[in-house]
Length: 118
View 1 (cartoon, helix red, strand yellow):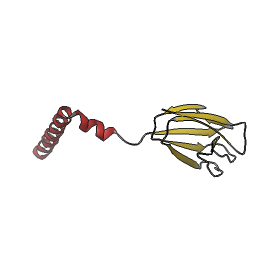
View 2 (cartoon, one colour):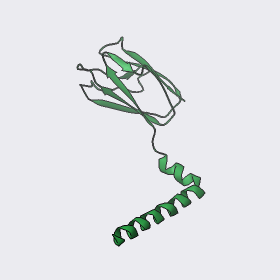
View 3 (cartoon, rainbow, N blue to C red):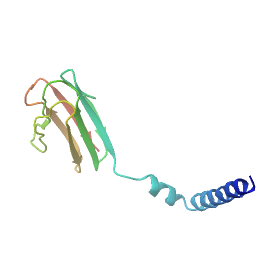
View 4 (cartoon, one colour):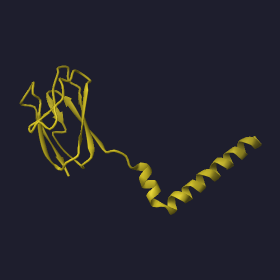
């Protein structure tokens, strides 16, 4: 029992010390949370969801085909183009330039959507 109390005390001491370091250096906490931005678009029932998405430059967007038929993801300006995505297949693209990217499914051209990169 004494060993358990000692161990718990040691862990709490270390956690308290770490919290003190992070609170005096706010950039340290922010850097730990910083990472590549990401977003997800689901393909289901012959639609992209969400239909309109706004992201920051540097964001990686991943499309996931939840439909039981193949679909593609093709930008109007041919900046990105996926292969045919079967059920549960994924396609990702990292947006590095601000702008508006309209896209569609080349197999089902009435399926359209838009990504705005700021």
